[in-house]
Each structure stands twice: as structure tokens, then as C-alpha cells.
Amino acid sequence: MDDLTFSARRASTAATARPDAGGELETRFKTLVQSPLRAGILRYLSARPDESFDVESLMQTFGRLRLDVENCVRELADFGVARVVPGSPPRYAIERPANDTIVDLLDQFLERRANVSTEDQSPSVQRFREMIGRDEKMLIVFEWIRTAAKSDISVLVLGPTGSGKELVARMIHELSRRSVAKFQAVNCAALPDTLFESEIFGYEKGAFTGAHDRKPGRLELANDGTLFLDEIGDMSLIAQAKLLRVLEERRFERLGGHKSISVDFRLISATNRPLEQFVRDGRFREDLYYRVNAFAIRLPSLRERQVDIPVLAQRFLARYCAAQGLPLDNKAFSREALDLLVGYHWPGNIRELESTVSRAALSAPGRTIRASDVEFLHASTSAPQPSGEHMPTLAESERAHIVRVLEAAQWNKKEAARVLDISRGTLYRKIVEYQLEPEARPATRRTRETEV
Image (cartoon, rainbow, N blue to C red; front, side, top):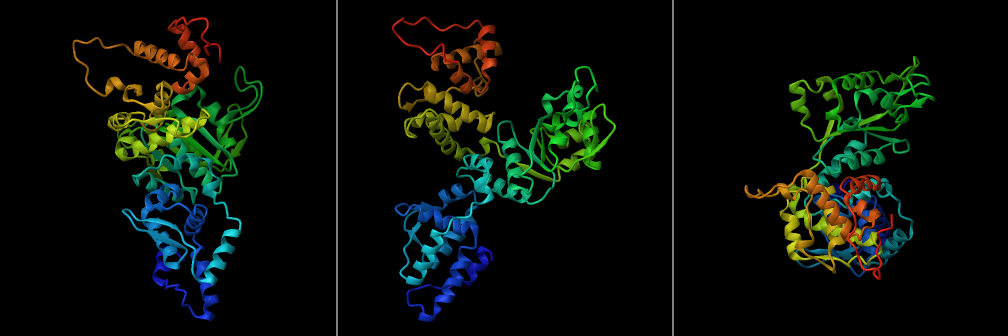
């Protein structure tokens, strides 16, 4: 029974209920907690008896739309197991019922082990919930993900760079019936035609020079699971034709082989490219476009939900503190720093915001992160520069930024590479390329330069 149907049939559970109404109360209570969302909220409130929560915070916690949460907390309050704390907005807290029968039912419910939902078991869902703020756009995306996960329909995830497209693909996989099998991710932009067949289809021993053993391809590894093609808009026409054949026949041959192999996989694709325009321009096959775009999910850019920027920044800051073994409130943003974050255009979206927060926390000498501690990777594109002023080259800007991070990390290369979001190998190459060296420090002062 859904929430609205239950709402239409609810009745008062005042303590004046008839003595013989125990069976009716039990039936109604079982109906109440039959809803996973109502049961989850009831357990959540019960575990925090001294706290109260508004609808917005419950929406973020459970990843559900406002109407769903409002209906559920209202049903709990009407039944007498939750209470409304007056205010603007109103808040909700657990309520100890006056009716002994309801008290017994509630205690029995709370003593039972809670069923761990598929969503609560999914690491990707937990990560996605951290990206939900006050704007309901991401909650709508969550509903699309739940819908897509119920079937094997091909999904196309659209969104700008850094918005979480692969995370959405992993969520769909982890919430689907195929979650017990493998998730195979392929970056089409990094896969030239010369490697496409061997990477996707695999190869037999002796298929080409250097093929000393048989190697299964991503299609074979994704059998019974999910194949995720990231940046599918960058796939060449030749590769598109080969992919289309597999989607139509669900069979393929390894490179250098003659045996046809059957595969059963779910396809999820992602792109930040305008595929419809590519189809009109002849750069993307129309028949393949309809194959991969059976169900589209569009991720909003960070600029489209500016109200979420302070919320997400605070979460990323708390995560940074936890990763460093510090109290979650060890660092805090100043008002000016938050204003600076909100006013930025965020071309790298969520990924860039997280990196920016980590750099700011690392650079801030004290507890408060000031506006001067916030540095943007794309700051030069946020405002026009005076025409007479020297414009640094890309190499000069990159060198200066790497030096700032290394100095802020006291030349701890492991930490600097993490903040820069690059591998330590790449950082070492950049240090050699730009001939970087730490500034001389007094011999009595310990440094972390040698830590790698």
C-alpha cells in the first residue's frame, strides 16, 4: 500500500481506543512500517531521541523527494510514534505513544533487526548522497537512477565534466539485478582505433606481435554484468560500427579468433558531448544513438544548483578533516570564502569543488579558511584580464600552481599529488620537467620533503 493510499485511510489512534481494538492497531502498525521509507525514518528518529529534524535534512539523508518525506513523517505523527516540533520550518522527533498497545508494537519493531536495503549496501549510493544538497535536482536524478536500475534498458548519462557520470553508472549497476557480476568501465576518449578491438573484444594467443597469451576483452568480462562506455561521443565511426554489431547480435569474436562468443550485458554510456548534433553532422551513427539512448539521465552542473555549493563545501571539508585524522570541525570557512565559492563558475563541477576545498584546507594556516586561501584552477577564465597585462602561458600557470601546492604540503609529494588529483609518477615528471626544488630551510627545522 503506498503512502497516499495509507493517508486516505488513516484514523486517529488516541488512547481512548476500544479495548478490543488491539488487533486493528497491530494491523495498522504493520501497514505503517511496511513502507521502507516510513520504517527507515522511524528507526532514524528512534536512534536519535534527543534530536529533531526538518523535512529537508530527512530528504538529504534518505535521498527522497520532498512530497515522499512529508507524507511519511505526517503518517508517523498521525499514528502517534512521531511528533511535530513547532517552528519554521517544522521539525520532527520520535514520540513515546500514550497507548500501551502501540508502545509494545513500537518496541517489538525496534528490537527486530533492520533489513539492510540494497541502497544502504551500495558504496556508490552513499557517495551520491553526499552530492545531494538543498536543490531537488539531484533527488530527481536519484529517482531516475532507481527507475533505470529496475530493468536492463540501455542508459545514456549526460552531464558536464566532473558532475559524477561514472558514479551514476555504478549506482545503476549496484542497484540492479546484475550487481553480483562485474562492472567494466572503458574510457572511449583514451582508446584509439588500433586498440579498440583488443580492449573490447580481447584477443587469442598469436593474434599479433606480443600476443603471448589469450586475453578476454571487456565485453567478455562484463558478461552477466554491466559495460560502461565513458565519453562515447569520442568514439570513431569505425568503432561505432563494431559496437553496433555487438549490440544487435550479442555475439562477437576475439581478435585473431574464429569462435563466436555470446554475451549478456547491460550497456550504460556517458558523454558531455552534444550527441544529437553529432548525429546531424554525421559524426555519430543515428542507429547507434537510438541503441544507447533508450533512457537518458541528465546530471545538472554545479552552476545550476548554486544553493548547494556551501552545503557540499562543508561536507568536503569535513571529509578532508576526517581523512587527516582531525576533528570534523577542525577547519571552517569564513563568510568571504564561502561567497567566493558560490560566485565561481565551476567548469569542473563536483570534482573541482572537492579538489578546491582540499587545497584551501591544506593552505589555511589556522582553523579559519579565508578567501585568500581559496585558489581556483581556472581562475584566469573567471574574469577578463587587462589587455596590457602579461598573460601567463599554460606551462607557467601549471608550474606556479604545482609549486604552491608543494610548498603548502611542505614538499610531501604523496599529499601534493592527492591534492592535485594526479599520480605521484606524474608529479615526479612535472618536478623534473619544471626543475622544481624546495626552498632552503634551516637545518634545525624538520621537513617532510623526503616523505613519498
